Length: 301
Ligand SMILES: [Zn+2]
Image (cartoon, rainbow, N blue to C red; front, side, top):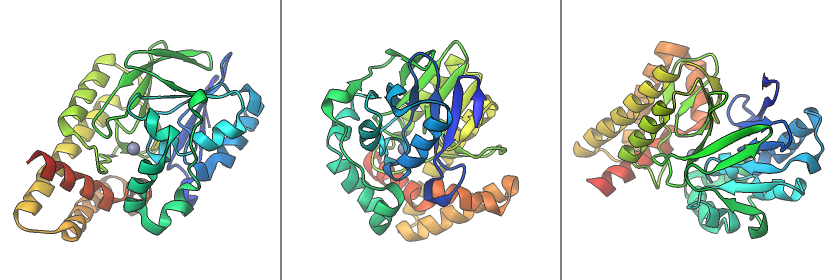
């Protein structure tokens, strides 16, 4: 889908689901991607690059918002297939792209037997191709200059990419999960690094940029910026309060997940119907969000 003359959204078709994981292709003097998608979808990303009229040699930038496998799992595979591409990442994430062992162990605990089917084979990014971006560092992708904005909360190793000239903010997961044609947001709160006050500070920082448009990885462009960010913060705080309450009344993880699933279903159905609930579950399973909230509450008291 072409979002602007120089900006294409490649739908990775993750888990046989359209509109789950976006990869953004920027055209211009220094063609590049924001996000790689998982290794399992590298062929789809390469097809999207060719469809845009580029050869694999043309692509020079792979900038990832954070190292979760749905965003950056394909970086190693794509460095093999795109010989001139350099990878750009948050300093905290860099070691885990060079050696994904810990990342894969942690994802394995969440996804179990489904890991390989969903994400493919996550391979290392060669150190010589990897570049760290610090907060506010700028980078040319396509013909645009974007700034890396340190935005912890969902994860410590998270950047959003800010294109001030166009008012476009590539949000990764810091602006939550929202579907196209929808006005409902969910807070993706997986373990182990959820940090609610840090996330709120990141949201304040994003609001201060006054973006015209948010380009979510899950999924696509959204122009209802204030409503979206406001809802996200509300959902985040509501999630913490509810899970804290359930823990206080002695419920375990499975029972809490069931309760939170009912709550999410009611909220989503009220706005977008039942189909949207299943769609959200593909992108960010409730169980993982609950596990992240439980861990956060136990850690912070
Ligand atoms: Zn993530």
